[in-house]
Length: 423
Length: 156
Image 1 (tube, rainbow over the protein chains, first blue to last red):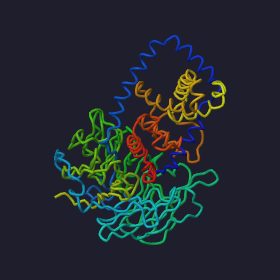
Image 2: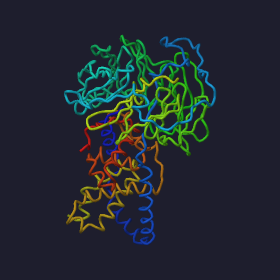
Image 3: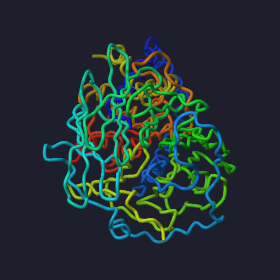
Image 4: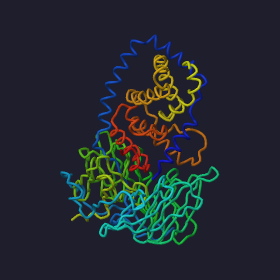
């Protein structure tokens, strides 16, 4: 995820490229002359704009939209790919869809409040810790534990914590070190049951650079890598056993290195690819974004194979997790397996027509006002006045966590990793 | 101050604002010129009673949203500002993704993060409710993958 500071920086940098104002007065004068000649028709057009504008506003900003998510690394591992065996393994595995009959997606049912449908996956927690730091859920690391980052103003000081929904207690994992870092201390973060990785971003002498850190759960932070240049923009990162894997947003390309330390290695054959769920990768960044570009292939970086995604005519923003893909077209949103089977229309559920987003955990689709469970057809509704946020969930937009403001000062949290498997 | 003096003094800043609002130089110039034309019509009243800069920026924000609804022009991914950035690719990507936002959302983002305005003021400028401002910002930031300090902004 990016920070507000980065957004401010992007806007201000862009403003520096604005056109000059040398002829502004003359241009206004020309415009006035032209307007005087066309005054009658211009007034008619302006009246039409007002009416259209009001109508569109009501449509565009309807309150029911909940935008959202992406892929799935906490997912129950399907038999899609074998366990990772490290870098450079021989290409012996073929990516094939798991056996599942065509057209078996249960139809969406009436929505049920999330705390009733999945009581074990819902929790409420204070929005701030005892020191007044703002808490932000990052991902579920087990069915009862949620990884948090607790940040002071501007995220210049942060602490990584684990909240236990059974005991209601929080334990500190580690405090990111602040050596020479003047930017956000925790951006992209990921974890499994044993280890945590995160990135920090900073600038020095006009150059942006990124660091990758790791710590055992719990344990002392250790710097793994520092780099600058184009590769600093990471779209996805995962920790998997004793390795961390990530991909570059801008250029594509997947990197991997041991948590014990060493030299990051750009995986052969990963040019232009983006991590989806190690060792699965795709040809577009998997985290949610406004792109209309479709994902056209799924690659197995461990086995060295690539499989085409069946992209239906008219589809936009098709994004796939290991098995399931979501996309949108002129009629609305749809769901399918990556081989093009089991197509299900989601138009009635209010799927975003603008965001490209893969199903979370290869199972959940964020829809207007809640979450659609592909496995059961059930829809969990979320009563959030200001909408729900998807958390980093192990990578930008990975979405194993949804959270929202409940009553003032508390967060409602849905840990999708704790949703029971479908019966 | 006369209208011409105002344009000479503030034209550059308005073009910067217009560029961030629209995403490209042609539309920025178009937007600023149109807003200044309206300002010139109302100059005597605005100069005496209101803040001309605030007035013209409000016109620009509103007009930007209306224009885009009317014209439906697409400037999706190609209009990345030239030149180097501190973190070139990160900002370049963010700039591209801003271009894909609905115009109303973009206006909210620019007013909030470029103009640094509180949500209540943004609501007044755009003529929408504060809840709608929050909703638009929510969707825009989600699309941009920007994590906001959501629990500290505009909650009163």
